[in-house]
Amino acid sequence: MNRSNSGASFDIVHVVLDIFVHVISFIISYNVWGRGIYTAHEWGAFATVYIVSIIIFLLCNRTLNIYNSTIFFYLDRIVKRESVSFALAVCCAAVIFLKASYIEFNVEFMRGLCLVTYEVMILEILFFERILDRIIMRKYISRVLYVGSKDSYNKFRYFLKKTSIIINEIGYVSYDDNDDSLEYIGKLSDLEKLIRKYNIDQVYMLQKRDMDINNLQKYVDLCIEMGVTCRVIVDTFKRRKSFSYVSSIGTYPVTTFHTVTMNTYERVFKRLFDICFAFVAIVLTSPIMLITAIAIKIDSKGPVFFKQVRVGKNGRHFKMWKFRSMYQNADELKSSLMEFNEIEDGMMFKMKDDPRVTRVGKFIRKTSIDELPQFFNVLFGSMSVVGTRPPTIDEVAKYSTKQWRRISIKPGITGMWQISGRSSITDFNEVVEMDTKYIDEWSLWLDFKIILKTVAEIFIHKNAY
Image (cartoon, rainbow, N blue to C red; front, side):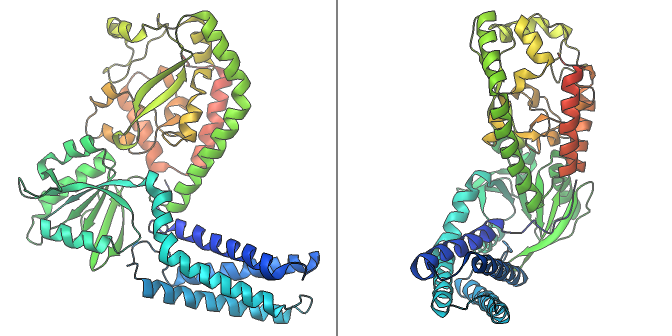
């Protein structure tokens, strides 16, 4: 996995909004002052200069830490810094225009463009930056628990609200056994149960100055084992098997321990890839899905699609869609077939020549056509193209602490398990090892290789039942 944390605190939504501001400002200025003033050749040259000025503006903002989500969002500070970046970008653009004699310098249009851009930029800072940021990111907000004393919790939350960091505060866990505040949801000794119960993504631990480091270390290790990101405030801890980086929120230094990637750029690219890939896959396979639906309906009674509640990232539940490959009473017959389960420890159910599978079901399973509807799960965000196998609720209930880490990322249609033996693997611990290996070594290139190998597996028809 790429462990570079250079983008972990990068506010990419702010960058997108800044680019959007320049585009909107240009459209407004062109319709008011710019119609008919340039030839096609001059417009091409002007567009190049304008794009360069936008890049200069963004780079200046980055240098001034405007896009760092952990800094305090004071309006006077943000306006001052963005004004400096804007002035520098305008000066650079003006110099280029003066040097480029083949571009006519239309004073009225340029003055109007600068004025409109600056006004829209200030409007964005005052209103849209905070509002749109939350609207866009709401679906991807991390569910967070705080561990610490009530006083430190309140002070830290005060600092946090002054930044651009957006989180879903589930509550806080006191070092004491109980607390009478509304936010209190449990004691520290029950941390694992609370993580499972509330589908926690991150835990902030606010250390007490007189607290035994060794005592707190075991809870840091617990989060690491479960694949839950742990952010420890103030002190330094052994890194164990996780990766870490240091940042700050207000006057608090924060050491983050994590086993999943925290790189903003690659996570955004992965999601964009999932959306594009799923959309194209749905369009290209729609004739196959239509024929499959008709065949299922003719072959046996029951619905075309099979939907089942599966467990996603960090315990979230979602409905996974597949083409129905079994008879309607398949779930009722499962208990009577448990003695034929080929998974040694019973953590999953796999059986060759399963009598519950229909005639059409055998074919669509062998060719993996039954999994095509899962591209809709990918499109809507509950799954990824590449990830770990999505487990059932009863499977997750049996997970040990270490096994929980395999669901610390989104489940995928394909993954290491599917290309490494699939149904021939009968040891669940081996499945967990492959999944955690994928989590630890994740990269965009690894996803691409897994997709290619999956396609090859489908044509070979090996170990699919």
